[in-house]
Amino acid sequence: MQRQIICAGLALGIGGAAFAQPVRPAITSVSHLAVYTSDPAKAEGFYVHDLGASKQPDPENPTGTRYHFSLLQFVEVLPLPAGSGINRLDHTAFNVSDAEGMRRYLMSKGVAVPRKLSRGAYNSQWFQVKDPEGNVIEFVQPPATPPAIADGGLSTHIIHAGFIIHDRKLEDSFYRDILGFRPYWSGGMKDDVTSWVSQQVPDGTDWLEYMIVGTPDTRGIPATMSQANLGVLNHFALGVPNMEAAYTSLWNGDRLKGQVDARGQQSVPKIGRDAKWQLNLIDPDGTRAEVMELKAIGKPCCSAFTASDPEK
Image 1 (cartoon, helix red, strand yellow):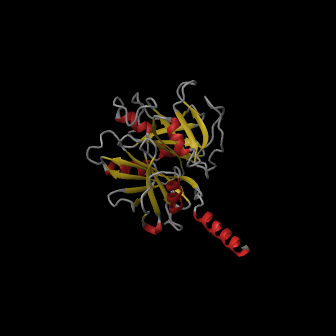
Image 2 (image 1 turned 135 degrees about the horizontal axis):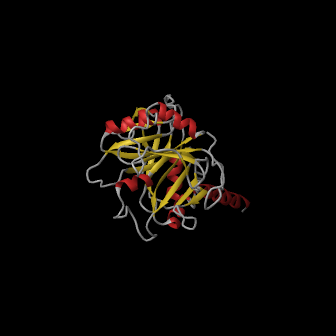
Image 3 (image 1 turned 60 degrees about the vertical axis):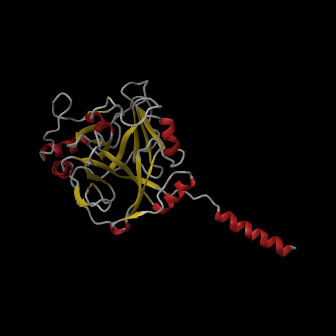
């Protein structure tokens, strides 16, 4: 009898291990934003000459190009598909410690995932899912020893990426409840209307920014939205420690040519509602590249910061 009890206990232990819930792997940083271009040559001029990125082949898509700002962060530029309309955003990606572990974790949470990972150069691995509103999100396990990337002299850190959403609560059910993103800051053009919600990855300081449009019951790109406005909302940000030094480098390198604001005047740095210096630059198809100081100069509007700023 005692032997049977012991065997039953071992069986329960084995069964319990077999049905243990997968643990979420670390989500450490923004990996990249993938955008479309209607003119690859102009896009290359913007990302290489103006922003200082390093042009590299694209192991995910042979028709695309990667513009690296560091070993593990880049903008992926893809040819504009037929019938894409005004949309220039393909997907947003985050670096993870274990892509297969993340795939299994999301599957355990009821998220639709591919049957296997995609693999590329230097043993990089990735897969894509859709968030509750249909935005394509990619999780990337970077190679252990990626090739060296030259420093372009402006920024080596994509500190955040943002895209339009409609239903904050619905999106939180994925990014916060399942993935563990942490609140960072929220605000808008008016103190009492929240239009921008920033939440950091759970294991780093980079963040995702909801750009809230429409109402919670709507989806997709609003019919009245222009390509220019959509490109401002679907964006990425390069962190810099000092805006004056960054702007000086852009000015002296003749890297601001053609960058004008809505009034037709030269784009210049300004202090955003989050009290951080920022400079908005626009790629040839309208995607905004925001250059942003890492730390606020004082008290932001609307809400306090609730997590640590990037350090570099």
